Image 1 (cartoon, rainbow, N blue to C red):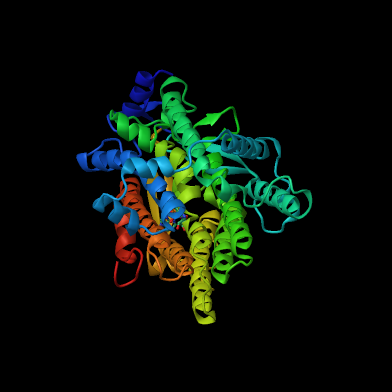
Image 2: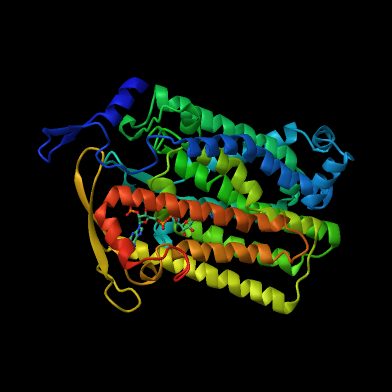
Length: 479
Ligand code: NDP
C-alpha cells in the first residue's frame, strides 16, 4: 500500500460494528494510543537535538576512557585551554577497521541464524519458562502478532561457545571485544543507521501492516520515533524483538566478560567491583531472556514504533553506554571494601527484587485476568474499556493492589535502584560510570510521563479513576 493510502487508512478510519458494517466515520483514530500523531515544537526540538548529539555523546564516553582514563572533565578543560582541539581528539581515536567489520558481521549473522533457524527447545525442559511461539499484545489496529521466543536459548548457546573458546579452542582472545571497542563503534553505527533508514523507507514502500503505521507529517519525528509498529521481513523476522534483544542484550554480558578478561590481562587479577558489575548486570540480562515472552507485553513492543530511537539505540546506545561501568573498571581497577561491596550487592538485589516482583505481579494479573493471589489476597482492580483502531471495543483491568497499589511504576523504581548499584560499584573517583543512573532516571521518568499520557488517551475516565486510587508514580509520598 502506498504511503498516501496508508496515511488515509490510519487517519480517516471507518469504525466497524461487530457485524462488520461501517457504523461511524472519524477523522481521528478510534483508539488514540501508541505514539503521537502530531508533533509539537518541543518534541521536534528534542528529536533533532537527540539525532544530532546522541552519536557524539556515545563517542565522548568511550573516547574519554581511551584517551583520558575515563575523566569526563579533563578533555573539556584541555579543549578550553587550547591544549587539544576537537580535530586532534578525533585523529587520536582508533578508526574503522576491517577486522572489527568482520567480527561484527559474524556476530550479527550468528545472532540472526540463532533467532531465525533454531526454534526454541529450552521451554520443553526448563520448568516455568515460556518459550516457543507466543502471542504479542493487541496492536492499535487490533492485530495479535506471533513471536518465536528463543532468546534464552540464543544467549545460552552464545555463552557456551564463548566459554568453550576461552577454555578449550582459543580461536580468539576473550579480550577481543575490548581490543576492538572503538572500531566496533563505527560498525555498530553503520548497522544502526542502515536499519533505521531501511525501516523508514520500508514504511512508505512496503509496510508489514499499513493499518499500524503512523505518519506525523514531520520527517525527523517519523525517522526517530518510527512509522511502522511491527516491521517484519517474512513471517518471523521481527525487527523490534530481534534488535531489542539481540545483538545488543546478548552482547551485554559478553562485553562485560571481555572487560573482566582485560583486567586480568593488564593487572593479573579481577577486582571485586568488576565481579559485582558482571554479576548484577548478568542477573538483569538473564531476567530479560527468561521473561522474553513477558517482554512482548512491555511498552517497547506494545506501543513504540520502530525508528532510529529503537534501531540505532539498540545497535549503538545500548551496548556502548549500558556497559560503561565495566569499561571504566578496566582503566580504573577499583577494589571495594567489604562493607561497600556488600552495600552495593544489597542495593542491586533489593532493586532487582522490586523490579521483578512488580513486573511479575502485573504479568500474573493480566494473564489470569485478575484470578490470582497477590500478596496472599485476591487483587483489587479497576475495570476499564478502550477502542482499537478498527473501532472494536475491548476491556481491560488496572490492578490497584500489590506493588501496583503502592505506586504506579514501582518496576521503574526497582530498575533505578539496580542501575544505581552498578554505578556505585565503581566507587566515587569519577562521574563517568554515573552517567548510567542519570540517563536511566531521565529515560524512566520520561517513559512514565509518556506512558501515562498514552494510558490516559486509551482509557479516558477509567485512567483518572486509577490515578485517584494510586496517586504516586515512582516514590510513594514524593512523586
Ligand atoms: P510497564 O511494564 O510498567 O507497562 C506499562 C503498561 O502496563 C501500561 O501502558 C499499561 O498497558 C499497563 N499498566 C499500567 N498500570 C497497570 C496496572 N495497574 N495494572 C495492569 N496493567 C497496568 O512498563 P515498560 O514496558 O516501560 O517497562 C517494563 C520493564 O522494563 C520495567 O521494569 C522497566 O523498568 C524496564 N525497562 C528497562 C529499560 C532499560 O533500558 N533498561 C527501558 C525500558 C523499560 P495497557 O495498555 O496494557 O493497559
